Length: 120
Image 1 (cartoon, helix red, strand yellow):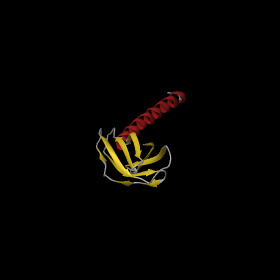
Image 2 (cartoon, one colour):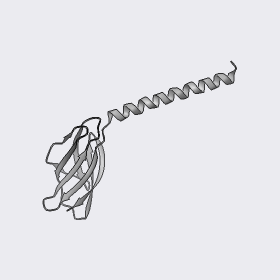
Image 3 (cartoon, helix red, strand yellow):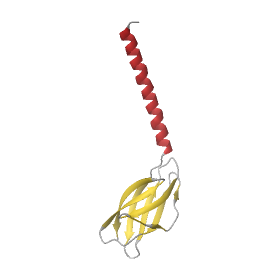
Image 4 (cartoon, helix red, strand yellow):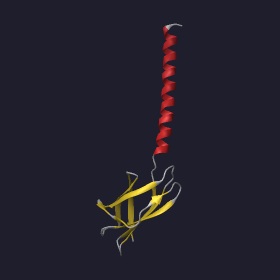
């Protein structure tokens, strides 16, 4: 074999190895992380209660660690542990907001998920 054929063979082998590595890495990454989705967020003005509807698409369960509204941490009124494929409601007592909507962050399994809560 001449040097050009060896170079092509080496390039093909390295490209195949990188493709297999990337496939294995992304497959592992997708099965190890769980990101919940927020379907609805409403802050009730009369009692300053925030209600979030959270969906866990899987593959692992999710713990709701904290809720922040306008940068201030809310007090969770129920401990939420969301099973894979389940829908759960997160209730929290938050500070009074003087606006039509409020920006917030839900912390689940250590990941921050932003949301906008409507005020009713």
